[in-house]
Amino acid sequence: MTLKLPGLIDAHVHMRDPGAEYKEDWTSGTAAALTGGFTVVLAMPNTQPPITNDKNLSLALEAGRHKARCDFAQFLGAGPDNAAVIPALSQKAAGMKMYLDQTYGPLRLDDMTLWRDHLSQWPVDAPIAVHAEGRSMAAIILAATFFGRSVHLCHVSTREEILLIKAAKEKGLNVTCEVAPHHLFLSDEDIKHLGVGKSEVRPRLATRADCEALWDNIQVVDCFATDHAPHTLAEKDGLNPPPGFPGLETAFSLLYTAVSQERISVDDLVSRMYTNPRRIFNLPEQQQTWIEIDQKARYEIGSSNFYTRCDWSPFSGWKVVGRITRVVLRGNEAYRDGQVLAPPGYGVNIRY
Ligand code: NCD
Ligand code: ZN
Ligand code: ZN
Ligand code: ZN
Image (cartoon, rainbow, N blue to C red; front, side):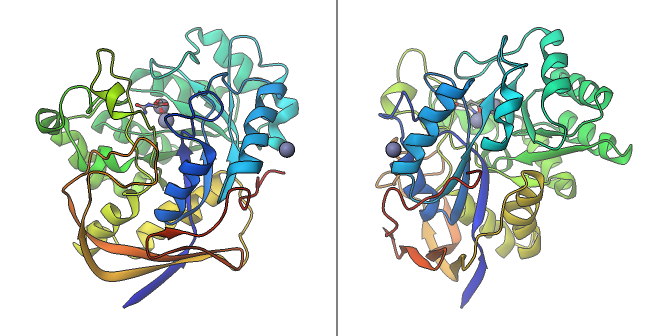
């Protein structure tokens, strides 16, 4: 039985290009995206150099233009001294990303007066996505409200966060959020078998009760986003393991397995992987674009031979239901039965 769905949108992907192409680049990352059923990826700005100005944005967009196999847009990063200049670039970017807590890379806004500068100057109709955990999340919701603007909360992982967002929505505040599959399917109980280095991720794997709270409040979750954050196995097993999991190639099947178990519906999946991200990030419709799924296929997630350059998964050995068999992107077959067919450069910058 073949299920046909719109091309999926992943609003949270780390391409590592420019600067750390040995982890991932636009070509390998978008091959992984197509394999996972994603036809649009929004790339995060914590690259080397970070995407905080016109010159660095051009670097990323030029690399994407030549190397991406699926459609894309690039986030700008909020830094300590760019609040006045990046608004002029907002039309060229997926949105602005604010990092409020410690994570991978140097982009971080510790000083709340910098929040004010960014929240007040970034155009109110252009998206802002934030990495804000726990109390920082409460603080940024309040700050965004003061400036009468929306804010999208990345990778929500705990009970207190999802309940905070639920309360904010009930008050009519303009907040949206995403959850990553690893925070739905993995908890701190998995650290033992994954290993300490491999299980490093920000936000950290939370308790089983936190996972349950995310499932119990799935109606509060606007998007599923992978937070595909590739680092090599050598790095993950090394002395200073960087945080992050690859996720593009496993997200759909993990979530479709939840559909097969009647934990969520196909409509829940489509709203969170297509309709809502498209609305929140103001993305154009992709003509003649869809994915085909073999709903009955059962398989085990492997431990290598992924398209992502980092070539590992925290879900190796997981048995899943539902396999993407075909991706058609703007009228052309972009993926079929394990083969990525769209060449580097086929992908277009949707903010062009
Ligand atoms: C991300 C990365 O590696 O860039 N890591 C992570 O653990 N999620 C950064 C981030 O999304 O916070
Ligand atoms: Zn060029
Ligand atoms: Zn983050
Ligand atoms: Zn991320």
